Amino acid sequence: MRNYETFSTTADTGIRFMGRDFRELYGNALRGLNLLLFGANLRSTSGCDSAPFAFRGDGPENVLVNFLSEALAQVYGRQRRVAAAVFRRASRSAIDVRLLLAPCRRPPKVDIKSVTYHNLRVEKKNGVMRVAIVFDI
Amino acid sequence: MSPREWNFEEIAPCRWRLSRSADGAMTADAEVFASRDILNQALADASIEQVVNVACLPGLVGSSLAMPDIHYGYGFCIGGVAAFPAEDGLVLPGGVGYDINCGVRLLASSIPAGEFAPAAEGAGLALLQRIPTGMTQRSNYRLGKKEFQRVIGGGVREIVRSFGAEAGDLEFIESGGCLPFDSPGIVSPRAYERGSSQLGSLGSGNHFIEVQVVEEIYDPDAARLFGLEKDRVAVMIHTGSRGFGHQIASDYIETFRKRNLGRLKVRDPQLVHAAIGSAEGKNYLQALNAASNFAWANRQLLQEDVIAVFERILRQGRDKLGLRLVYDQAHNIAKFERHEVGGEAVDLLVHRKGATRAFPPGHPDISERYRAVGQPVLIPGSMGSRSYVLRGTGHGAEATFASSAHGAGRRLSRHQAIKFSAQADVRDRLRRAGVLVFSLSAQGLREEIPEAYKDVDDVVAVTVASGISEKVARLRPLLVVKG
Image 1 (cartoon, one colour):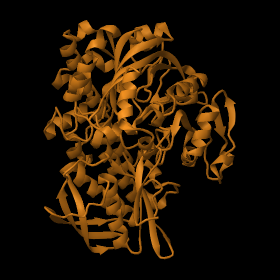
Image 2 (tube, helix red, strand yellow):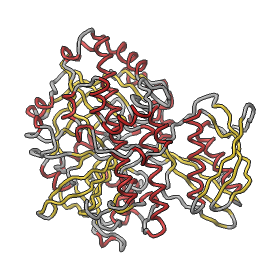
Image 3 (spheres, rainbow over the protein chains, first blue to last red):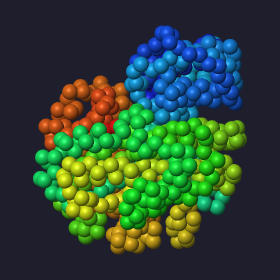
Image 4 (tube, one colour):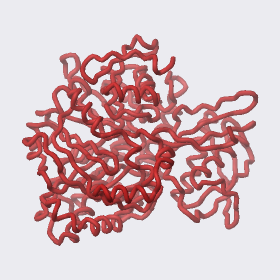
């Protein structure tokens, strides 16, 4: 498995990603989402605004859903993609982050409506956390 | 346990039961309405495990059910039906799905298919031009907060009041197009933000507007009551509550998780639930009503747009064109209904996720006009294939809490569908088959190729063979506008 990749189920689609720590895990979640939305993890930050965000949860699954839901709200509600994330804190129950937000120059390839909890579990093996998230499209 | 080890028994034609003894955690049996082929597909894609997971929930009335278009979803399978006691049972947002009150609406007309054919290209372009489709934020009905609150409180009644829709349509919409909602404070600002810019839009994915011709009548009495006449044009609209419903579902899954997940034993976190009588349960049901009202209002506004296009293109008024609503039904919803269980009338909360309500003849909650034959059941096929109109039956009322299939059901994932197709092929191939396709999304078309879905004829054959609905008419597509 790569650090992040996309996959499909019969009706929906999702991302798989991994990380040795939460900073890497959440960062790869964002890269996977961008890959799914735009066909590439667009790293260009020209013309970006940045804003601080805080996400809390009762565990990493909950934090991930809140984090990715905000990234989707930026894309579909504000037409801005989250080009990068500068984490100030990343733990199993919290993210404090500065998001770099760039205008969407082209529409996303897929209309993701929600982040689901379907079979969502952060599993740790040999010091690496692995997650698969299914999106409702 | 390997899914293929489930020991299903065919207890009646196309009705398979898995006893609760198959899994120590099951509190009820699981039943699947399927042919052997459809059952095998469901076993292969793990949707049967989802039916079993629902059968493990406490307090389930009857069995965990799956309709003939069963396929893999998240939490519930698509095609899943589950009922809980209205008094002290459970409510599950995952048993409704994210697109709350996604549903189908069918219009009949007196337009001969031959007269429509020369205008089809123009009609398709005009529909695509007028109706916002895909991911656009464009809306023909951008509303202020107060106006929007009136729509989510009044549903189609508000569209009749403020947008001039026909009051006569109300009796041909499930629940009259309005469920009670009077607590605007329980809907999040983000849901308002997503919803207020999307009223009157089709959306993306498998949503569509299809102009069809009535190709075959199986039940002339029912067809006459439904206003369906052979070789006449009909219009089918498939969409839901757009971002508004999705946001409400996301918000309440989050709320349910916070309050309940730690003490619940669920195999999939998507099956998080609450007591119907709890504060969060009551609030979710209220918010679900708001999203349902939005969806009915949305389909009503799309209907008004379709009628306006037909009037302009065909240069005749609605009455002259004979355009009238046959029925509007939800297929992602939870509703309080009374059903007979063990010889007694019991009030239940029936969850249907990718399943259609199919009330039998004589049911008091369907229009008087249709009462003798039962509720219309609309089963759209995949893009380019036939759709069907069926009707509810007494057997269905007994066996499935009056539920039926809702569509063909996906067979290929979207990635598989894209690999399978070449974009030029899709439009050209369908055009050669007599179906014009209009869409702003090339990728969307490739994802929705006919091969991506089960054969709707098989789904309908099982639906009829199992006795849960009866065929009334078959419709052939002439043009499709895809989201």
